[in-house]
Amino acid sequence: MSNEFVRRSLDEIRFWSRIMKEHSLFLKLGFRCEDTQLIQEANQFYKIFENIEVRAHSFSDTTDPEQIRRFNAEVRNAAAHIWAFKRKVLGLIISCQLPGGNNFPLLVDHVSREANYFRNRLDELNTGTLEPLPDAIIDENVFFLRIMADHAKFIGHLLDPSERQLVEQARNFSHDFDQLLFQAIDLSGMRPQSQTVPLLDQFLDENKVSVVALRDFKKTAKELIDACRIKSIIHPLLADHVFREAERFLFIIDMFEASLTRVRR
Image (cartoon, rainbow, N blue to C red):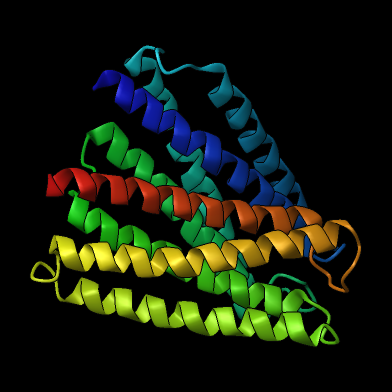
């Protein structure tokens, strides 16, 4: 059990510390030149999470669990601080104190939700209060389906309007994932009666088909951007970033499917 705690902790930190690091860069790129204080804060967070990422890769699955517990607590505090920074930025944008910047309010809210998710996951690991499987399946899907829907919206708005076919594809994905999210919320509201193995199995199957399609669309978009074959203002790292998050969602769905298979036995 101790090794499992260490493994899961390091897996979460290795993935999400890189995501937090990249969020810092994306926010910085969206600030105006005169927003020097915000740019400086973003740079500081970039360095903090870059250091965390490097340290996370220096540990192994056999590291002393108490050492990882302390590391989790440290990283959890860093996640809490970047969450507060993102919410501050969102407040400044919504109150029109950052006119002319290039950070969509929804994007800032999106990245703050991911910081909150990361913080909560580290709390759950350190306190040993991970959700039971049926609740985890629903809640993780509600979270990630909204993330995927957001991604489709961002891609559609950051592609050049003349890329009509790709823009239309992004809009279709946005609609599809909004519908999947509403279905997931409906299933959540029917708990605990909705938490049967057949319903959860179908829920995961349906979501997986759509996530695979979106993942493949992101992969194609990333390759086209890298090759300078489409017109957009999408940073190549952002294209890779959203692709990795879709891969993460598929990894989680696969874990849930394996867990349900064990339950059925």
